[in-house]
Length: 197
Image (cartoon, rainbow, N blue to C red; front, top):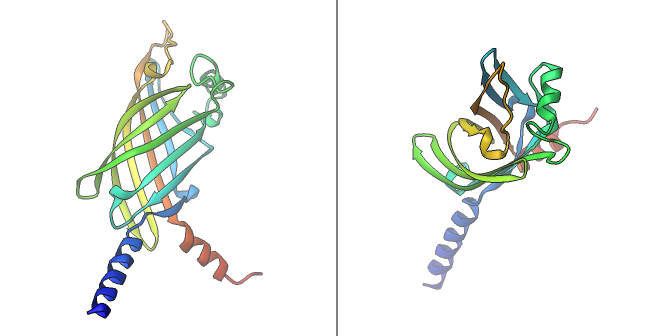
């Protein structure tokens, strides 16, 4: 009887351990954070060159996962130097005062097949607002996961009230996140196993 009880406890403990979220790292070559800002004269497409994410991922149950994305605001890039300098100014990101943008997940809920709702805190220009994001899990295989989301951000909620009479800017900016992550432990083991030159 004691042996059966011990084996049962061991089995349950193994399941609990296996179900814990595991650290994952971003695969930068297959990840990007973009945005689209509409104005009268142009649809400005941009991205951020420098950012990273801390990810704790449970591939078997995504709801157990969590993440924090940190973006270097000065790395904004719309492929037009003059416009990028303006975006870095106090009219927009004010990067000298607020060098980082962060998005921290608070709760993840499954809403459908590979669909999840994320409640999180977005901090931009020193203002933190709770936002809701719909995320799609594109894949998880061979210790690699891909997740993507497109969601609106009202720039005025974060103190970006600048506008131009000649070229009015829409209040709503569309953010697009496409992230590939790799199991940290599995990745480190694979690197260690490679023959050195």
